[in-house]
Amino acid sequence: MELKEAIENTKHFLENSNELHSDELEAIWAGFNFLRFHIYSMAKSKPVKIDEISIVKECLHIISNHLLVEGVSNNFALFAISFADIAYNWNNNFKKDTDIKLICNYIYLTCSMRDALRHGLVVSKMVYEHYKDVSGWMPPAFDINKAYLEKLLSNNEKKLENDKS
Image (cartoon, rainbow, N blue to C red; front, top):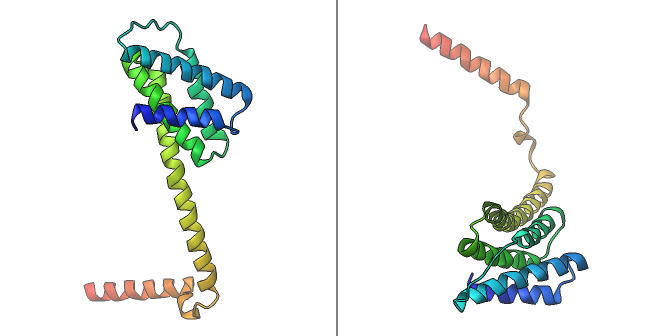
């Protein structure tokens, strides 16, 4: 995702969000503004002094907690990926902090797995519904008895022993 698109997605979500508590929203706005300031300063070749990165980590923790604990909308998932893109790129250019890199990767992975799991659940429901429909009319010939199978196996074993002798 392009940086400009990620910034627009994040800004749009934060301006219209009702999925975050007010204190979380305030913290993420602060982190978002912190990241934007440094990115725009770097683009204008202005020197940037970065003393404290805990604000970025706090935002990433809030987002990752929502992904893990609460059911999230598609809008939140897009926001999470967008914010993680911004933080990841900022981190690569300024700090190279392994914790930030790890949390961003966690966010990417969680969002991509979320879609795969959702698709898996839909397919599982379809298979289950089909099984319920089909199981009522399956002929008894398909319902093989375990004792019958064991008898067939023992007969085959006896035949194999007789053929070897």
